[in-house]
Image (cartoon, rainbow, N blue to C red; front, side, top):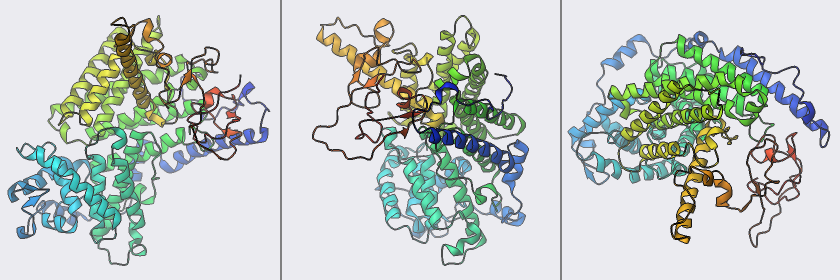
Amino acid sequence: MSSTTPSIISDGDTGGKEKTARRSTTRSANTGGQVKQQVSKQLESMREKLELRPAHWQSSIDGEKTISTPSETQADTLAPIFPVLDSSLLPARVADVDIALEWMIELFHEYHANYHPHLPIINPTIPIETIYTESPLLFKTILFIVTRHNAHSMSRDFHKQLVDPIRKSIADLSINPNNSALDMGIQALLLLGSWPLPFGKQSDDGSWLYCGIATHLAMQNGFHRPGFAQEFREKCFSRDDLKVRTVSWIACFLINFSLSLKLGVPCTITPDFTIRNPSVELPPKLKHHLMIATACSNFIPALSNNPFSATGLIEPSSRWSLVQLFDSELEALLTSNPSFPESEILLLTNRLHIQTFVMHEDIQSTVGSLETSGVMIKAFRTAVKLITVISSERKKGVLQYYPTYINRSLVFASLWLLKLIAFSHTREPSPLLDTQAIETAENHIREAFTLLEGFSVVDEDESMRAAKFVEIIGGGGKSANGWWGKSVRMRSRMGSGLYYDAIWEKKEIERAELKSVGTAEGEHGNGSGSRDGDGENGENTSASTGRSPFCNFNISTDNEAAEVQNNRDIPTVEVHPPEGATWNWADLDAVPIDQSFWGMLGDRDGFVSWDNPWDIFGLNPPPIES
């Protein structure tokens, strides 16, 4: 295949021998044609409507009309920041903590100086007492965000004390959303999507839920149609009201897209007219963020939101072509447009997510390692630059004020570098990276670990857990089942597949350690396991533990059954329905598995026939007959 950007759909791609007439011939043919048509339409739509060239992106974001006039903008600049007009309305005690008026004002001013520029959705000229009386949730949220890194001796305890009152206020907003300060409540939820409440594990992070509440409340009240606000709420709206609603809706999209990227799920907001053509003058930094998110929110679904595929992925040749196209567009945007460090971090992170799609086994086997090496070298440069830009922000003394997406960016860049180092070792005598590049990668991984540790505030917070994750997964680079030198196994998590693959590997390492300890105790210290997973005894961690990383069912390690079509070491599953359970699910015959994890074990044309219909969720499919 040529190194230049190929056509999106190859005319000669008919599926070859793998398209058989075993089952639903017409359905398979129609499905393939629909996928091709869909991809073609998506690309054509992006070329014509999204205006892929960076110069066009800029013009589409600027819009033709603005609500704010120069005189209004100047007036906002000259207005006092978070003034206090009537201090008697402010509390002397918040969350069971005494708070002096001077310190409260200081905290709000610090929020405006250090945090507001990252998500400028609050009108900073509103008096503090107005925020407190109309939206206690927003009032406490601002204090919570600022006290995370505030130098005051009481900040740490105050920060912890605010968590439960904020959660209670969120519950109150969910129960009674139709209050006069709905816009402030939505803004508070969006801020918590960027600076979340503490959580013990990723599944406990409420950011995605809070963003969903904010998005639905905003849509229910017409924030996505600011010019027709009266059709959603029977009240008169001022020009400032319409500006707040527009910016809040744009923030809903930005936070939604950022969190969906983190979770590896589709963004639930499609860029609409208000997002593409905002009728207000946006701050330059927010405008850059919107430009990047609008483009990438169309790029990533084009690769991974195929309705005719169980994983959402489009077929390999089209996916490979789109990855090259989208990557070149983001590279052009990066090099031809001045940007802010925050925008550059977002752009580089999104680019790594798109480049991750080349790590799938079907692309590696279909396109070839030599063709994909070019994108992987670009990913190396992207990851190194991403860590470098973040490090420069730490040297400026501003990194601590960033939203917590910075944690995921550092982890993701580190995982890419670890993966590339391993790929280099597996491709001897023609390694992907030379000795100097490998040394550069290792230095930047260490820098990412240091940055994550420095971003941490208390033990076991998200940043510290992220740092330990990089340390554990980095130490296991030579471990277990050779994961580092293989393709990305997670296929339904979009560009985040590499991250969740690493979580799987981390669990495998931990299982190997537990087995090693158990063996040592059972054999009086003569266990054969290795803590780091090195050596022959660490090569088959999955099989030795007898547990699947996806479910708690026993797995069979029979060698013949383990030979799947892509020759990867994926064990089959022995299905044992729960004791006493009765199942009456619909017939799942000819369910379109396509390229899903379990579909790799089935028919090559993407369909399998399940004789056992009780597991509709696909967690424990029956053994595939050879």
